[in-house]
Amino acid sequence: MLTEKQKELIERIGVFHEHKGMQPLVGRIIGLLLVKENAEATFEEIVEQLGVSKSAVSNALTFLQAKERITYHTKPGDRKRYFTMKVNDWRADFEKELMNIAEIQQFIDEVLDLHKNQNTEFCCRMKDFSNFLEFFRKEIPAMFERFKKQYS
Image (cartoon, rainbow, N blue to C red):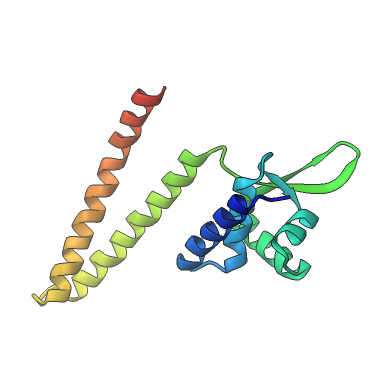
């Protein structure tokens, strides 16, 4: 059984992900997998501990697997699937997210090119945002290197 502190943390994690545009249950499943003592849960445990329908859990798990946020494994002699967070390669996942930032910068620069003869507040803000994204993208490798040196 989950403690009250675990339940409260699961709910906060769920709300955080909901504010990021995910379905509430998706965030709550992430929270459950993060707070469980063994960091894994079966389909049935998720349904029971979160008090939601099987179809809702099935849809959320399908979404999380498609987004490569979770994975599952089986155990010898047990037909159940044990779902876990996919955290083994967080650096590669983070790098992929940074590539998305670079793509956003490309879109912003294309928009700015369409407005190149305009000197509006919008253009100034978008140029500032583009400059920040470029700076951020260039600084990330140095941050990773400092991290490796500090924590290796």
